[in-house]
Image (tube, rainbow, N blue to C red; front, side, top):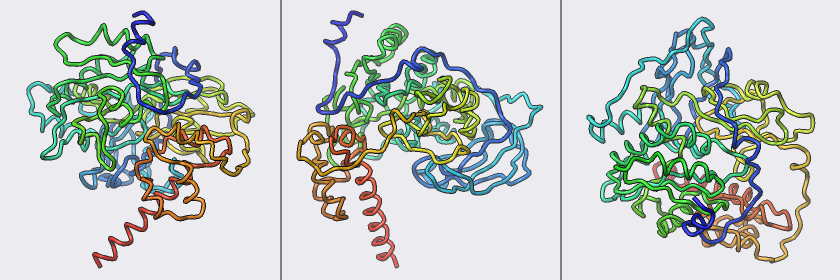
Length: 453
């Protein structure tokens, strides 16, 4: 496809920013499987919603792919053993959130071939949409783009709603990350099967694969391999951040806006990540639940960048050792990308369902910045993809006037950090917004509890 032809078809949204991509570290590196290690830490909370409930106890023998924790409610997810071995303990361990979280500790059986427990093919064409959704729910799938929202909840269209369109989020707009890019090139068959099954469950009439134009090889390849009987097309979108945010992608591809306070389903759309769909395809091909994922290990602070298939629960330090370790001037490790990723304080935290990348930054990228007064330049307003006034919100947050921030649509903020990125005064806007949201949610929870009592 020629450059001019691509430009004519490119879709996008208004505002946003153009940070440097830094994808050359790993975009051409095939996915490789990391060797098994001795101990795996599987937190019961690695998804949005209620934590899982353990159904095993210390001393139990477990097999790779076996259910070890059940969902605690509808908005929750099951958890499966990522290796065959013995449950060593169920105790609190360090979590990427910075908290201590109850986790199932599995000691790997060094003599096991680590074959999949109950491997089988599920004939998705012969089962009902409800049965297919149940299989996904029992497989423990969540959004693998980072949000980790339970997949079955998204696929369960509420009464009175309709999902006419299904969008595959293949934008991967965060700098450094290349997991979706590599999966599209190497695991397209599983992804396409996941799309077919999801469309059957939703009853969707059309699917769109939204890929940023900085991945021309993936755009061209998918256009070649999408079956002619599949109502699915590749939709190139402009390379811009945060193109991969659900609302931005819907606006770019369908020219539909999700109303304030509403969800994509209110615009007759459901959005899923590439990795989630690859996992769904593998579930129906092999009966494999979500027990491993592709993670990009990258950045100037790592000796050997890579795209790795990693069993859930492997510790961060073991992954780093496999990649040659950290350079001496490394100053920060992020789970996720540099825009929305979470800095890590401990090296023994586990790889979880939502861990899309490990980014190692050096003292050249991470250094103290002095916050200055807002100069009213309006760059944050021009950057905000949801048309908020970050400057005004930041002023309220600085003096803890959180309730007044609601009048300026604080809850519509998608925390993309575009405002913080462009601020010449180095004001930590998005960090203050997160604190404000947390404080307001705590207050609402207390008020609800007070009414019930």
